[in-house]
Length: 157
Image: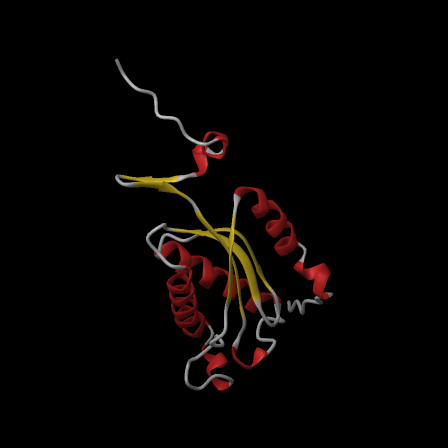
C-alpha cells in the first residue's frame, strides 16, 4: 500500500510555483532595491533606463535569477525576484550589480566619465523576503514607482 504525503495548505495552493530539486522544495522570493553610486540620476534618459533594465535582466538570466517585476528609476532600481534556493540574497545582489555594471559600461562607454573606476552601483542594498501573499502588494508598489516618485522621463529622438 502506498502512503500519501501530506503537505501544508500553502504548498497545495501554490504547488506549481515552487522550485524543486532532489532534496528540496521551496521558493525564495525577494524584494530588492539598489542605487547608482552617489545617487546620481544616471537613468533619467529613457534610452539609459532601458539599457540598465536590459543589463540587469541579462545578468539575472545568466545566474538563474528571475525578475517578477523590475522598475528602473532615475536614481534607483526597485524590483521583486525569485532566486535559487541555494543562493543567498546578498550573493544574488552581488552578481546582479557586478555583471549589470560591466554590461552597462560596455554598451555606454561615456558613463565612464562620471564613474572612471567602473563602479556604477553604490555599496548599499535593500532586500526583504516575500511570501506568495505579499508578492502582489510588492509588485503593485514596484509597478507604480513612476507615479510614487513623480518621475519625468527625458525621451530623445
